[in-house]
Image 1: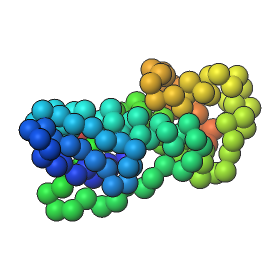
Image 2 (image 1 turned 180 degrees about the horizontal axis):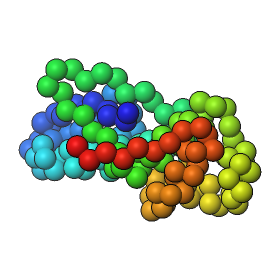
Image 3 (image 1 turned 90 degrees about the horizontal axis):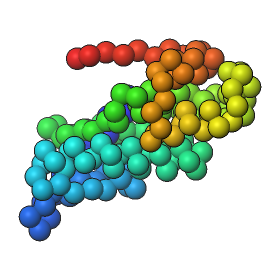
Length: 138
């Protein structure tokens, strides 16, 4: 759902990682493995800018053959899924808070990708939006 293709470019002994779909997300690594690990944090930071600005999340483009992709961690992906559902339904955070019976700081923490929200809170928010959270180990 949130698999974003990355471009890996050798750069002065390092590996530069960029995302065509999320230009705000840029990072480096000493090698490809480190660069891809750092890319998760860069992607989450880049996507948090969209959430903070209340903008729609960029849709991941299709990866070219053999092109690597990066996705946010599972908890952040669940939060982003709830955020996307809220945006698609044209709801404001205040309406989500009303439906959940929560205070606004709780909603703000729900969409803060740096906050370790509990999965049951994310599931509850998804439920009031007519969605559900599925967790898979592949």
